[in-house]
Length: 479
Image 1 (cartoon, rainbow, N blue to C red):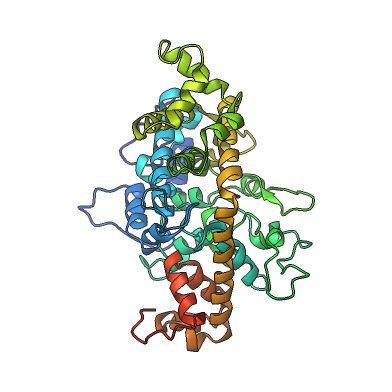
Image 2: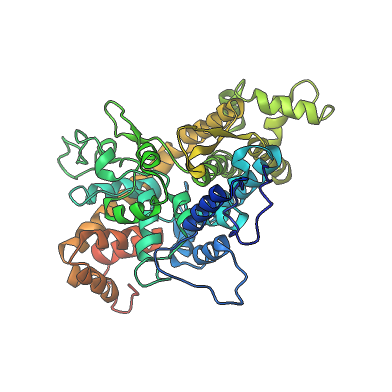
């Protein structure tokens, strides 16, 4: 008998729900598999009075981590300091976590009898995964990512999602050797691209400088854009994460798609990761649009022209639910609400998020035996096309605008300068605690990359000014 997602045996950890079969031997195998996803790389036993499940523990460790707090000082799209209204990486991550929790709950309600519903994560676990998804992004957003991939071109490269796994499995200090020591299932949910850098990179694309510049050295951004991957330094961690998979499942899970003239793209992700990924897209497409409108970075006419005829599913839903609200021109009414006052804009934004969250559904990949790989979450095609149009509008009118790109360009230049300065003489320029870590690593350049990647925008800027500004500075300036 199929159980609902919120029905669990008392001895099965929350966040690891499963369908219990009638065969006792099969049920025992399934229980062992579930317990395997609850394991941690370092043994840890909760105190007897601790009522928390795996997801609760993981969520607490993420929320209380230094890496999570630093996200408040990292750029989402717009430069920090221009306003205290718009999103940072921290507020974006909180919104992704909340939307991911809503998606998981929605799936349980919309598809209670679907086999995938029995394997949905509990709220704390999906919140933990949502809050971690941007931990590895360096200062100055994707400009910083491109810069560090260039800096690490001879040392295994750099990619923000891969750095997230590295932070959680190596750098955070909740355990002696396993970083935050999160449960295996949470780390599987964080593993957005389950292939290493060296396996998906296109060797014909080498991070390099632009040719033909005479006065300054500039990055060739196209060549410096990293592949979607985890870092080879975490191969052992990924081996441990994927240990419960059968050999056949693991081979399939590590498939990729070759793309001429580009890096290969990993093909698969887990059920939990797919929920987080859809939530990230919703937050990116809707909430970043809200910031752009509120700060006057896009005009009503631009939005009208770009989105006309791109949102039939949303307009149909509005007409069906609110028959007398918009007259005969629902699209114009929606645009008026978005570009009206704060109250009408927020009301419309909430409707957009609801429209996308309620359009999620399961897909099944029957070649996989493991349920966390077999079931995945996607958005229905009509709503997906509308969300893609919103994201494209934000990219075209905001992210790639000269006003934003000037700041990203400057940021990536400062990241390269700070990294190369520190790499030139780590003993002289690294803070003492970081130098100890560098020495203990056997002078691994990856440790220097960890230090720079972990900087907030403001800390990177202060470090750059201290190293390169003509201003004398002071020994009392905090490193």
